[in-house]
Length: 263
Ligand SMILES: Nc1ncnc2c1ncn2[C@@H]1O[C@H](COP(=O)(O)OP(=O)(O)OP(=O)(O)O)[C@@H](O)[C@H]1O
Image (cartoon, rainbow, N blue to C red; front, top):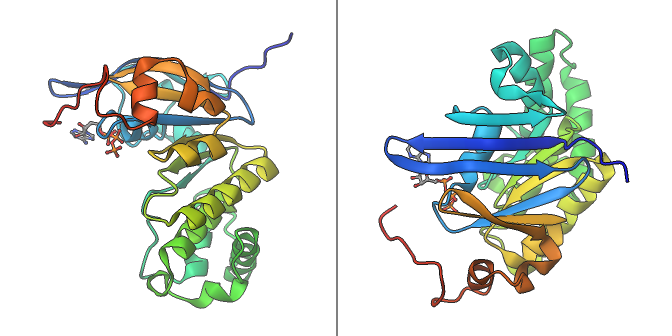
């Protein structure tokens, strides 16, 4: 069987803040066109892992390859170009209240265009934003509103529209269903799966929501004490056979994982 190169390949990734070791030799492969869900307790380092890949915080050691290129050793300009191919849906939507909804959706397009000297006109950007809003089930007329006028579920949709606007090869989702009711959570998960499939993107999602993890993920991995202690199909999260994963995914108080209250 021919094995293609992982879209994202991480080896020996380490990150500490002072004496606190957060990532302690992470190895992770995400194959092209697949979705990886990262689970783990509060403070286990899920966001730090995503932020290291995005270059928002420097890694201490290890490699992060995207399409076979170690982004950690690229010159800043080249690295920026690679990072621009990643779409990100932030936990709280991270919409700018000072901009209209369509300007939020088109923000990345306008910013990338400005850097590369081929900035779309405002009319083009607005038309693209309207199409993206339709893709996430919103009427393009919503584009004229301010984010503050939208419900939490609509804000997530706008965040998703912004994440997919640049047709990214890679999509990151940071707790996409947090704060949503279960039905809206399922709707957002469905949209995420549709968008990822339509674009053929490779995705990494971090979540505490096991239903969401199973809906979004092909594969899953669990972070505990700086290490990925389990990796397997997301469909087996609730019956992995690993005592730590079982305790976590079933939310049991008793088990091999001890809660550290000072993190
Ligand atoms: N910039 C920073 N400076 C110092 N410590 C940090 C910094 N960023 C994160 N940490 C620490 O790293 C650890 C992991 O944080 P991280 O946000 O990745 O956890 P998480 O798994 O995403 O948690 P949650 O599920 O609660 O969002 C925490 O102990 C946090 O305090």
